[in-house]
Length: 488
Image (cartoon, rainbow, N blue to C red):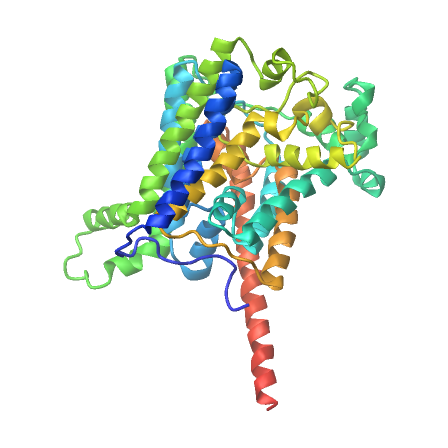
């Protein structure tokens, strides 16, 4: 293994790239498949439009992610391993734009966002997730879009991440002995239904005995804004997202971009004006990533608007109600709900898909709080949020085909090992941190939830640890190879 298992190609290098005719045909075939799914389901029952909303936003996310090579693992790895800030800058651009759109959606009363409890678990989960995503070479969303490019290593990540969550949330035995007594007692005090008794599993006790006792709020609420416009635009967007993003971009500029920008400009240096020009140059240097960030930010905000509008039109608060009304009650939770965040999310619906497979194999997952009480395990064909993940892969495939970047790639045994092992860590981190780089960071930070920065902090530190480990691993392996050559 001579490098980190991730593509470091500079996607903004000017090249003449004419799409091959056969790739155009393939792209239209993929697009046609999803259009057929959307239209045929609507013809069966007009209420499937709710599923199609998730599908087409997922398609847009996939195209945007692939076009900009958008990946949190790439951002951290490129920054700390090779000093390239392109991806980290693009992510901060998306954070700023999504926060503004989210603020507008919130003021309009169309937001579906719900804040996460604020606690140390976010840092711990982010740390484990960050280490894992560097090992795999892709974050949760990055692994999906790379699957759409034909990477079987990325598919290994998706599968290992998904099934790990299933086993983790339903595990008991010796893990129960690691749970603090206060968590166990607090969980039992909640008076939960017997079908999901917390004493059966450590994760149930973690949720009911610890996470549920924490407070969830937004910065707009913390600052005491009574005016909803001020709370959304000043508290949630400006204070929680834009100002931190500007500060992070400034840190990136001074640590990784400034030296190269100022090289050869010593005679024309004009103080703050030159520094500001350099800062702007860094932001606009990667047009492809910046465009992807723009589309992602706007689409993610519109996604909430559309889902909220459909919920109001259909008279539902959760997709579980919709499924029940359509006669599909199998897989609903005790509360007759299914996972339905109403915005861009990744890992939970993948866990549901894996749980459905395990259920078919005779493994009971509905006795857990995560599946049995909250999220349910619907048939994948009747899981609107899972439609989003599948269509994200499809959107990435279309964009990869149009860019002549689709290639079916079978990993070596070594790369497959790191993909699966890293995916396991990502699954553990996602469940402890209550989300991934999208659900626990991107969507939370941009909607004014400070818990997102805690997950982001842990993810960054974890990513740095992963980079340091791989540097050590590569140096160690090269040393062994050189020693073997010396023996001849």
